[in-house]
Image 1 (spheres, helix red, strand yellow):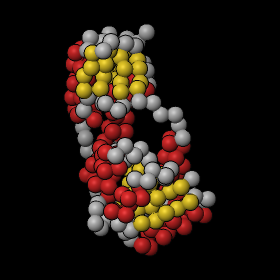
Image 2 (cartoon, rainbow, N blue to C red):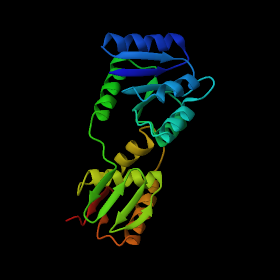
Image 3 (cartoon, rainbow, N blue to C red):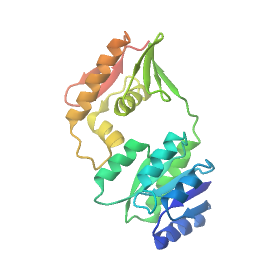
Image 4 (cartoon, rainbow, N blue to C red):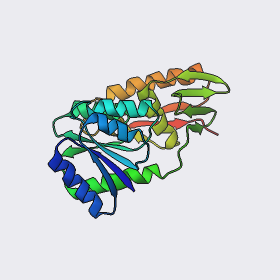
Length: 224
């Protein structure tokens, strides 16, 4: 497994590299955002550990550029404890997970293992349930050739629902997965996006419905 570490604090970068190497990972280390982007674009890494506060180019911009160039390498963001806004922005920009500084080596390794396992899974661009298809590449929902575009949040919520067919998903889980564990987003935000998705299911004429378990969460119904 090959890991890229992008961290401008040399002592921390060296410590990260040493921890990973002791656990049989191959590691490349760079110290600014521009180099991080250049290395990341080679698409040879199994995981990228990316600090947000970097010289030359900040980590969020590096992440956005990687995702814009279709680099799907799992990214673990390093954030300060108080930077809730950065965590939200990072997850919205395509980060797969974040790690709050300071951290212990065991937590770092557990998160890296989790992300590299995900990369080894078979990836599909399309998910189906009943008469609908959800496309990851185009962020669209379709039925029998009728398409409607989704926002990022709409897509993420719909993906969670389709990935857990007919299973009740609590509102808390949507918030933790999409906005982040320390987010101050309220249940009303989830309710608004569910309303948007119901309208879009109606637009394409789907028989699939998003059912409400009052006060708890949501689940999909209507798939054959």
